[in-house]
Amino acid sequence: MAAVATTARRSSHNAERSLRVLTLNVWGLKYVSKLRTIRLRAIADRLGSVPATPLPAGFKASSSSSNGPDQTNPYDTEEDDGRDHAAEEEQAAEDDDKDAYDVIALQEIWVESEDWRYMRSRCAERYPYAKFFYTAAVGSGLAIMSRFPIVSTHTQAYLLNGVPMYVSHGDWIAGKAFGSVTISHPRLGLVDIYNTHTMAAGGEDGPEFTRAHRVAQAWELATKVRDSAERGRHAIVMGDINSTPPSLTIAVLRDVGGLQDAFLASHPSLPAHAVSLPPSAAHSGPADPHRALVELGVTCDSPLNTWTAGKPLDPRARAGAGKRLDYVFWRGPNDPLSRPFGLLGSGIGEGNVNGGDGPVHQDPRGRLRCSQSAVVFTERLTHRPDISFSDHFGVAATFTIIDDAEPAATLPQQDGAIIDAENGARTPPTGAKSTGAGLSPPIQRKRDDSRTLQTLTSALHALSGASHIARKLQHTHYLAFLASVAAAVVLIVLAGILVPVVGEGRTGSAALGAVHALFVLLAVGAGFAGTTMLYSAFIGGEWEKRSLRTIMESIELELTPIKQRLNESDPRTSGNLAPSSSSSETTTGAAHRGSGSGSARQRNGASDMGEGPLGGFSAQRTAPVESLI
Image 1 (tube, rainbow, N blue to C red):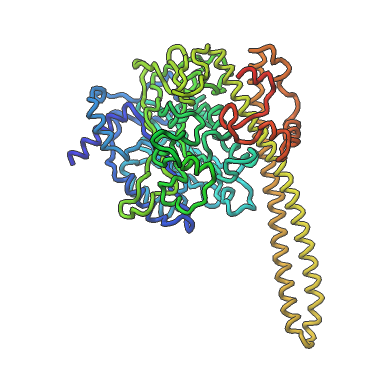
Image 2 (cartoon, rainbow, N blue to C red):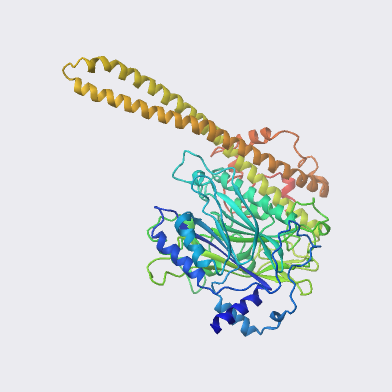
């Protein structure tokens, strides 16, 4: 008991100056996931075995929607004895609390009646606050558990979730979504925690429009995270993004949401878009899966995971000994007074360690710095050493809460570079290409705008191509509906012709009766198929087209001020980047003309996810924009 009390006391002290989070895809689809009950109960037992940590004395949860810089710090205690702990005691506390987290985000925990209830029964003492997110027919499979009070929640199903006809994908039926909770933290005030699981269809190779729905999901999530920052809150995003670092999806989260990657921040020597590690002198030949876990952050398709055995892997997974698909992102609140170079609330750019656009925001509540991030839950079950906990490994991140009084000379950035908190000078990571260390804020903003312009242009091309495909698919389904109706009519007529013959009882009438029954059965099947095709063509097709158009129009509005700023900062771009006065139909039509596999758009690298100049994908850009990068 003394050891438990000591661990709890140390954890309470650590909670004053750090925040530790975990994201884990538990692979909990009923009837499909193998050994689901055994694995999920093992996960729950492991998470629930950590002693409960008391919240700091004097802490009261705040439910106020206002959380600006002027708000009184809710952390108000008479003594602050956690500041003087020796380094060895802190290390001992970390060792004791290996599985002690403050917030946990779970994906694919679909069976509420069994798995979620067991998870809550085992973890309620350590994590007394929790939220299970409900969407669509079978649910999103998302859940969040927290040590800190949850004062509000939000569930938002993505507008685009695949095609209803593709039942095997399950995304549309499940209603892929993001769920968020607002926790009341003793040092940070109100913090928004996001959990998501984006759709997997589309893979990572080939034209970008095949992943347009995932890109659209990233846009929805990024804009929502930006809203959190504009409300004066820190935001943490966790989940299975189903995208590797060079993807357009990750770029949208970074450039639109102003999010930083926790694993990259704690591994500054890792290139931002790495999907494999270069062979070392000691490890030649195939990729070392152990190095891939530690240095690359691989979470899926790892040879070290028992569920990968026998699974067909694509060349990307084989080259990298797996893929990094699970992430922890974060950003801080916006400060209107510290953002002189951008539109209020844009939240785009890296000039602010908190994800804003201007100088570093000195917040009395403190700010977050990722001090550690690692792949976790890589072990096997204690009582079943032949299986892994899930087909994904988890990702843990520890954020240090820095006060204004503490020096913040170097804070890690999204690309692994270091930014000086006083003057904004950037130092690139070891072995990385220089990103412009020491640039003045206006020049840095111009570079950020150029990168954001490229990201959003690529997103528009992808969505436009998907819109073209959606119209073609809708047309095909309408034709299938007409064909099904015609077939049903013909079969009904034939069955009607056979009725008198069967009724007369002639020789062979039994065989004709069987044919009659078959025609009736086929007519019913054709009618059902026709109804399905009509439903898919009208409801599914119109839903997809209108949702794509809605998101494209939002992106075009986002592009307008960016183009204006680039035009104003460089007169040479005047006229080339002028905001378009045409509707989204013009943009859509232009993109459609280049959406084919042999189109000029793809030849220019507009949609292929190769190693483009800014993150593994390329956008079709005008020459003046290229001159800014």
